[in-house]
Each structure stands twice: as C-alpha cells, then as structure tokens.
Amino acid sequence: MNASETMHDVYLGLGANLGDRETYLRQAVTGLQRDLEPIRMKLSSLYETDPVGVEHQPLFLNACLFLRTAAPLQVVHQVARDTETRLGRTRTIRWGPRTIDIDILLFDNLVVNTPELQIPHPRMHDRIFVMVPMAELAPELRHPVLGQTMAEIAEQARKKGGIRRWKIGWEGEYAPFEN
Image (cartoon, rainbow, N blue to C red; front, top):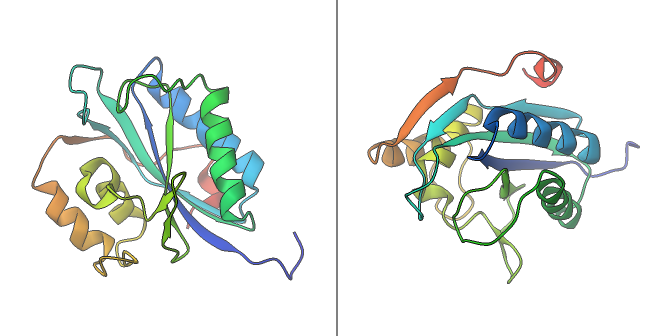
C-alpha cells in the first residue's frame, strides 16, 4: 500500500448456522483479512441468535467485523461473495441455512442503491443480530440514512430479544488488529 491510497472504513455482518459455525466464521475472517489487506481490523464478540425469515433451522452465530482497507467497494463486494463460495455457501432458500453469510453493512458514509448492492444494508437497523455487535464495535457511529447512533438503534432492536452472547472477544490470531 502506498501513502496516496484512499482508505475506507467497512463494516461487515457475518453469520453461520451450518456445520462448525465458529470455524466457518474464523475462516471467513481469515480470508477477508488475506484478500482485503486491512491496516486495521476489529471483531465484535460472537452472538448466538434465533433465525429470521425461515424459523425452522439451526441457531446462528453472528458477529460484525470492522476493516480499514484500500480496497474499493466493488472489490470488497466481490471478495465477500468469493469467500462465501469458497466456504460452501449455496443460495437456494432466501434467509435459509448457510455455512457463511457476509453482508456489507456500511462502507464509509456511502449510500448505494443498485440491484446488486444496497448500503447501508436495508434491514440492518431491524436486526438485533447485526445491531448488538455493531454497537459493540462502534457505539457512536451514526447510520448514514437514519442519523441515529449504532447504540441507539441497538437499544431499540434489543427489545425484540432472540440474542445470546456466545463468546466475548476472539482470542489468538486477531488480537494484533484490536484496539
């Protein structure tokens, strides 16, 4: 990376509910780290959550990931999709079971609305499994459309229930990137 590259603040939502959920999440983070080469990275705690949409499926493990990277939006989007494919994600049932799900929640302060991509993620503010880990990572960060902080939105989402902390922090290979 050279000094003239523009850096981007990216927040990703991660989820898995098939197989060894924590291993899939770790493999996704490792792949994103390798392919996006962030200069800073921070993970939320892991949370076990009830499924949304299709209710009769295994519980999810969810987390949020912050990256500061020089990768442009299109590259981040492609790397996320490639990582899902590499980890066995198949898209057969909307909101159905999956080995891994990687959603771009926020990219800088951009608002994007195309058939392929919507940023901020259009349902993030309604989903406790996104907002609680987001508030853990960036409580004062403001939603670029709603204007509320992540902590304020998370407090509203908490009233819905359906979330349990699984693991506080992730030890080991991610520690050098945390504050």
